[in-house]
Image (tube, rainbow, N blue to C red; front, side, top):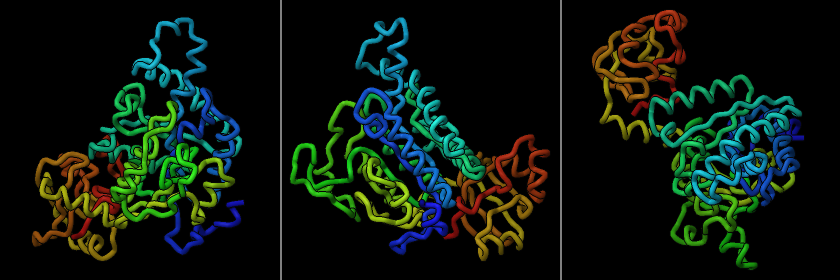
Length: 391
């Protein structure tokens, strides 16, 4: 079992250890190409996730399937004939009916392995707004810290663009954005395809698997087509969009068939399966580039004492309120702010976890006093080290 083969999480190919992985489960995989959930396949995938978790690897799941799960529920509703099939409203209704069924199924199957799950419905704006991005990240970090498996899905009931095929595309892009948000070490897209091919294998029997992609060239884009049936909304084209996000975020991505034996365990151990997209930068470089790009729009600054300056520069610590001596500007939670030392020299830039008015209240204070001082608590840090960059 995985628990005995990968206790130190070292990949067999010598690459960096996998400690946090995002797994995206596609519609066709979850349904077996039918109009209902394939419980046998889902149960086997969840067994693998449980095995991976036993090795100490944190797992987040981005899932499709709510619309498919809603079809059975719709069949039991007395007014089902009032919905016009094929419309966005119809798919929204299916998603609303199916989401509880999907989670009930997931909860029951994960419970067999003593794994708790937590549902999170998110939309595009949640990961594009810096403040909401921090909220999503903090929530997911907290869930992972207690050993739960976050199960995420695009909020189909309100995000009509996804249902109309205009935004994420079967949660592929969403999974890459989530992987970037939580600093994942690996993104795995599991479906009914075993990877990217030189042509569509459904149409060309001579199509060959492309095992490694280092850059997405026009030739690679040409071989990616849309979904080969009407069930999923993604297809290979949306997976290339996800790959672009992952590669630019410094996160390797793998496309593989979810029907292979122990596919998740084997990929997490470093076995080369399916198509692997190599990152173009490191995760640190990606985060650094993102923050430094926005530094010209920074909304304020904090001055820190010599102890905090030394901790930031030499030890890579987070910025705690105890080390802050003064606050300038009118920044809000999630804004980029400048951090300077006592003589005004720039130490770096980072994302503020608290607004300026609250930092003014907590500067110089011990982090343990924050809940009492503020009446709420976003964490001990004013800037977490993962959100701080020294140029």
